[in-house]
Amino acid sequence: MTLQRRHFLAASGALALTGLARAQGLPENARIFAGFAAGGTVDVTARRIADRLRDVVAQSVVVENRTGAGGQIALSALKTATPDGLTVAVTPMSMLGIYPNTYKKLPYDPVADFAPVSLAVRFDFGLAVGTQVPASVRTLKDFIAWCKANPTQANFGSPAAGSVPHFVAELFSRAAGLDLKHVPYRGTQPAIVDAMGGQVAAVSGPIGEFLQHLPTGKVRLLATSGEKRSRFTPDVPTYAEQGFKDIVFDEWFGVFAPGKTPAAAVAKLSEALRKVLAAPEVVDSLAQMGLEAKGSTPADLAALLKRDTERWAPLIKTIGFSADS
Image: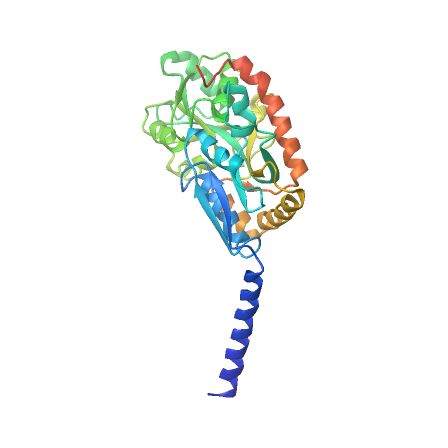
């Protein structure tokens, strides 16, 4: 064996032993619950985080898709999980900030049963039209005129009844003096496919869901819901720019731990997550789905949840929606 090969093998062995020693000092397993199916934005966000937390908080970090009941199954599992800092969930704001205003009874308390760890991503919504709507319709003003001229065709799809995209479009409909009929779907993609096929006039959903379809010309974004134009669709004006100053909404996914998780464990997880969500490869990967990676402190996430819960309560009452009806 040559001297150089011996040196190479020795160095490789030393690196392996160092990695093993580091791994041996960590817990064996950690889990991230995702309340929605594999391949969706919640699942993808959870998996990007899990990949980067491996060998940081535990030797192995796995994503468990606890689907069902619109995300409630995953949060119910989190509620009863051991509060040791090794089990968290990635969840949309809706399950914690919207559901208390639409369900008479939930299997969890959004505040008492969970410990905020870090924000994960934020995203805006878009309103798009499909092939049923003439190509001349390019703005909200155009769409309003078309709806008034074609009231029997004036409708929109959303990913689910009681979802934020549903409510955003309902608020627009009221502000515009329209009577848009809501068509609920199981996810945004089926709604977009029907819009492209001319079965539904418009779709309200997360911006990222539309991106892959825009080049076809079979779906056109008319407006986005953020405070400013989305960097993913810079040529599309916001609702506010087009005269609807109160239609300014976004949504976020957050990372939460069981409610009794020690503060020190929450702080450690939060610090690790903020580093993960600032990594360029994570930022770029999530951007492909129209998601803005963004970490936060536990206190900031708690304040954000409180703000959104309080903001949506009167709006939902105005809309008159109940998931129990």
